Length: 109
Image (spheres, helix red, strand yellow):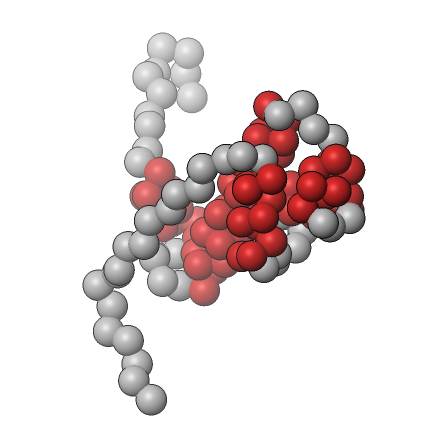
């Protein structure tokens, strides 16, 4: 690229489709699942730090080992929903999420 050429920008959706495949493909689904887990772990870590708690202290509040908190924060485990909710409750954090139905036909057994 020459110094006087403008930088070309691409929409995120276009880049993801090019490198991971269209929505609904296994590679794209796996990436998006990993991303969601990473964002959840980051939210837990940020909330813990804002409350000035160590992983050990948060674990004691929740009733789990420090290692479990570390695994949650680093997206190294598929934690049970109940455990994640206990963590946010211990952090006195409001949790909200949304459900979006995709335009897909569901296979019926």
